[in-house]
Image 1 (tube, rainbow, N blue to C red):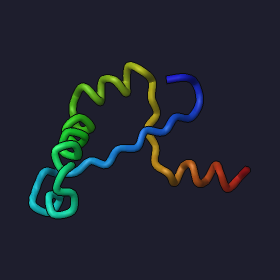
Image 2: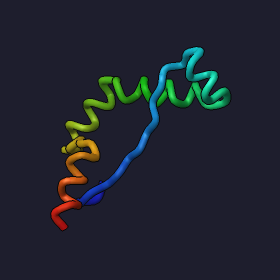
Image 3: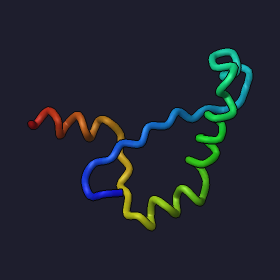
Length: 66
């Protein structure tokens, strides 16, 4: 990633009856997102690339100061 702020939005979910009812054609994609996000591969990539994970609360604080 280039230096600076990058956003990567994912919508993970578990492939179960509840998600199937909400999104009948995409539940497998959300399960795949979940599986990757909790994987050792994802953790390794974050560490190797020096990526700092944060949520929007940290960004809101910075935006409020501008």
